[in-house]
Length: 380
Length: 175
Image (cartoon, rainbow over all chains, first blue to last red; front, top):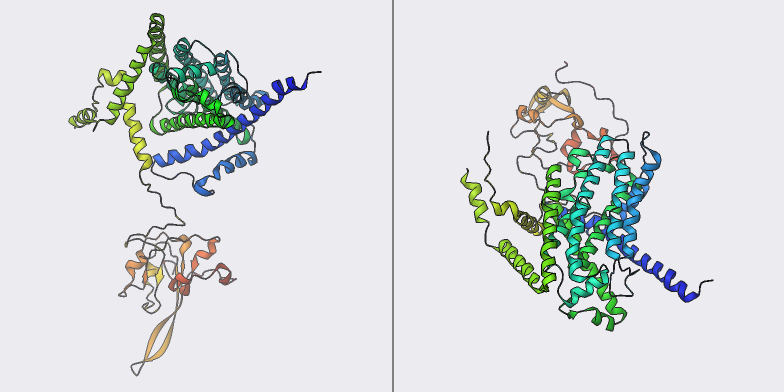
């Protein structure tokens, strides 16, 4: 018989923690649906869903109810087992990954702490493509199959820069453990400064991984009806949605943990560090979790912002960007970071980041886009 | 026609800074006031030339049936009888309007009836600002004289006559 403390430590507590994390994630995913539709509406000079409840917030509950109550239609020519498995498969890794993400200062706010958490997360998230391609194939529909194949090609291609962009961070921090990486960031600087190129590559490839808008070719509605989930309805469609938004959330959590200091608000050991939070007890932990989720929501909003702004790529352009630009850029970043780490001058990398951000800010804030405007009007 | 696009410079092609321009635009649009009119709560006031629901004036109408003749789809039904009446001390034959119905559900709001009307001011006109004509039963879109004149106080559906006789074709092209 297993002793009670052991049971508590290895079964009960992780389960409770996972359930809490799971519920928070579900609420965020459900809310994202409303947030995204509302934000897109506001950008497009309209209001978005505002009829159900205060500001349309009832939409968060109304949408799942609609999904549950709708008729579940299975095409008669579909491959039944694969058709059923299609929406289930991407859900499992998308939920499982939340066990490994540190939402707050350790040890309370992570379900399990694994020393190769990062590898495990990347391995798990990349299995999500199986469900998509299986669902696309099982629907027995040309558009669905096309969407599934596109998704597979795209996710495999962008898995490479996605993985390579993390290597620079690993070299700086010297650990696969997300907690360790966050600790490094609060003691030195948030990794987006020394790894600005990696951060950019990560941002682009996480958009591509999740089939989000500049790269949403698998579900390009103007070409493929709805891509791999054309034939899916009701709860099965909702599962695809759930998996997609969960995967987005996972990638945002990774982004925050790897490049933006996780649950801390500290750089160079000053500010709201893990030690400060731990000295505050459980309140500090909750504070850390709130900071983490706030940062994650910022990146979720970035997804929506990108969706509102950028038009879709052509498929060959997408592949070009992945293989001809992102991968060489990621390799170059690894090379440069390697040299600086080898020489022992990591500090110099910060300046690259600071200068890049300053120049970009200068470009955005400059009075008017004169040059572009002039070249556009001179042809008339 | 050949459209010449400005050739992107090396920096434009390599550092995709134009993307930031787009992001800036959408960010600005996010906070701009929206054009949506929240219909049941807010209503648009139509322009003065707007063609809305019919309005009919019994007092102005001289029962000449010109509107019924002008109607391209014959949806105006008019019944008239002659009556001897004393006007200025003389017995005079007058046309009296018995029925003036419009089958609005088939109407295309061309306003040819309004153009044909010889009275001044017009006794049938469409330049009202009513556009909320939806009903639950399409028979409710058959308007008689009183309804056309006083539709601002449109009776409830329950108050409408139970059995409406099938509209007989009296005036128009079929005679």
